[in-house]
Amino acid sequence: MLMPNSPPAPRTRDRSLDIVRVTALVFMVTAHWGRALQDSYQLVNILQFVFEVAPVLFFFAFGMTLEHFLRKPLARRIESHLKLFILAVVHSLYGQQTPLSSDFFMFLFAARLLFDIHSQISAANRVLVAAFVLALCGAWVALPFPIAYDFFMPSFPGWFPVFPWILFVAAGRAYSRHRQDPRTAAVALFGLSLALFDALILGNRLSKWPLSPDYALLFASGTALAFIVLDRIRWPALLPWRTIELLSGNLLLATALHYVAVAVVTSTHHRLAPLLVAWVSERYLAPAFSLEYIVLAFAAVLILIGLVRGAVATAGWLDSRGILGTLDGLFPAIAVVGIVLYAGSLHLDAGLRLAGLPLLCSLALLMVYKRA
Image (cartoon, rainbow, N blue to C red):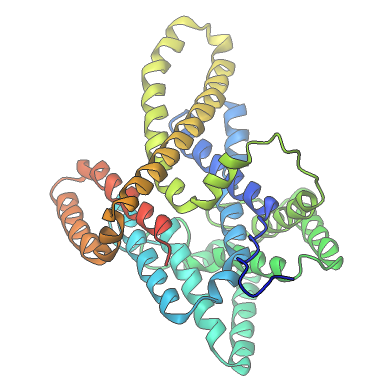
């Protein structure tokens, strides 16, 4: 029991959550840089399919942390929603050259806002919302799939329409609430088995884009089972926990900075590929490019770790001199001016897309270091 004047006990880190979040980050880096490779290499295609599960891990883990966010005071939640929306707008301009798209950060903003609104409504209305979501899921499964997905796809572009991708966030939140329940493993195993039966026995295709029900059920259930297994592992002290905690605790910043790491290794690949084609026999070309894929992915992760360390150290230096606090106070003004200038430059020349990367990373750093 703590004495009245003693400091609060440090919060125990969720090792399983840290590992899943960092795994999702590594998968995302590897998948994104791999898009520079040809689709004709079988091993690369298989690895790409595995690494493309990154958004599922991200969104599931995001759902697990929602409860902590929803307990914050209203003013802090509103501030955090606003900052995430601003970050999402810059990311949308960078990725889709439009301020509003159903891309990664915009999806996180929309999903968190919807769960925040849902937590504030009455119990009776929650039942209606749940019934509406179940009806959407029923239509998504029962209707011819492309028709249903086109119906749910929003009018603006992007990879992650709120429905059905929000199901992974809901699955993560549900899992966090029933994490200690022994029946959770049985439910997850049943979902995994059902998805595998439908895909392997009945022959229905697993599809990420558009998101198929089998893909959602398979990887949501699989992620829950992965957490169950990870929770039962006694992790050795020799693992690089400081690096894992650094990336997990600065996930939004690392997500923004990963574009820099991906750009570096992609540029390296474009210089290396002609040499491989010239020096390696055609018979061994596919294994050579597959090896390059893995080596450069490892290099991209190391670059990302260095970038995150450097950004956090720079933020600490700025904070010690009071500069970061001033910048945080000017966050809306900086963001508005930056967005207007960036959007205008893209309108004049789409080739200036990379010019928005410093703005994206700077806003992400302010968000992470000066959390609302």
